[in-house]
Amino acid sequence: MSTRKIYAGARLGEIRRGLGLTQTGFARALGVSLSYLNQMERNNRPVSRTVVQGLAERFGIDVAVFSMDEGNRLMADLREALADPVFHDTPHSRAELQIVATNAPGLAHAFLALHRAYRQGQERLASLDEALDRPAGGLIPLPWEEVRDFFHYCDNYIDAIDRAAEQFARVASFEGRDKLAAGIAWLRETHGVTTEFAGEAIRRYDPEAGVLTLPAEGNAATNVFQLAHQVALIAHEGLIEATLDFARFRSDEARAIARIGLANYFAGAAILPYRATLAAARELRHDLDALANRFGTSIEQTAHRLSTLQRPGAKGIPFFFARVDQAGTITKRHSSTRLQFARFGGACPLWNVHQAFETPGRILRQLAETPDGVRYICLARDVTKPGGHYRAPARRYAIALGCEVKYAHQLVYADDLDTTNSAAFEPIGISCRICERTNCHQRSVPPVGKALRIDPNWREVVPYQIA
Image (cartoon, rainbow, N blue to C red; front, side, top):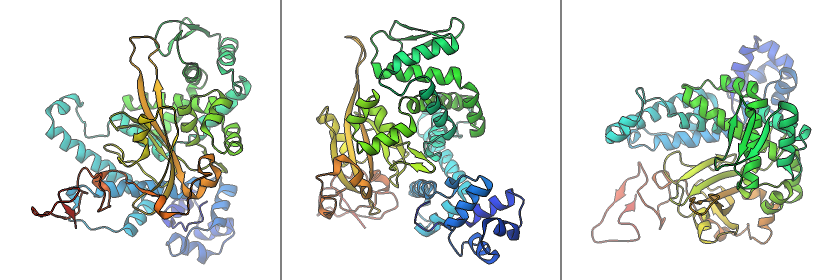
């Protein structure tokens, strides 16, 4: 549990009522006084470490329900939604958002869903093509948005699937470098599935014939990942379907997308098993190349896995991870840190991830500070995915991995960086439309909700001043 004070009286009360206990019985079970419990439920006192431990030990309650991470993510999402011009006459403070995110997360999610519906309605009116492409009832979240939010609010850690993948890695001898041979043997011996290498499809499975086909010229790391993906669908269908039932997606399409996402999650956790990866990351001080070499994985697979090491009781460094295409669009995003990516649009142009395309094969480092004053160490590297033959187009991305600077001593990349020098930190934001900086030379649009001063006889980098 974080050392920051957490006021979550509403959640505490909901847990007590769900257990069918009075305040007296609940206080006795947790080993605290009745008055102290009453004050916590009224948010006059923060939830204590003793109470959180008691909930976990006596009632099996996941302590993650009191994590500040979800509250921080909700606060970031609420701030972005409230930056919409439709709310320009609606004053709100950070303290108010904190109260809503902590004590009424259901209401916060409902508000975000309503705002998303409003935005989609405006987009439908603004673009006839888009309106025609959307299905009837398009005011509900788009399927991919709903799935993205599911993983986002799960902290991108699905415990049951992560542990199942770790178990598979152990019994299938999948923990070494020769994962492909081990996986092929396990599928054949356990499920009677034959693996062939032919064609150009990244993965094709014929359940009737029991044949898994991978590309003959495929990248080794990709072939291993796709084999593990198919293992998830064959050997853990029940677990995946139970997880999907729990998520309660609104459409069959969202459920289908999430099924692929959960199988991908299993594959990532199988090629980089949790405890082995966490131990190696600490030993090698999160050196991406050394970790990829040890586990026989790609740099992208390794970086993404580091951002998911958030198992309760055995957490790794809270990282953010993102993948950006050459147009600057974020195609993958996850954050276990306070840094939250914009839900709409691209990334801040001052972020070093954009420079990675200019220096192929190199890991770039950046000390950065966001408008809220939090400082990070950011890593970026280009990733090329060949098409497999001459005429096949290659795909180029840049990946970003980073954490708060207080963890920098655990990273090999920070050894010669002066993290105590304030001038060394680049001012970055989330996206221009919600960035509060008034003097950014890379600003593309004014911040929403801020008054502008425009003087035809005065011009600086941008043709306006932010009041």
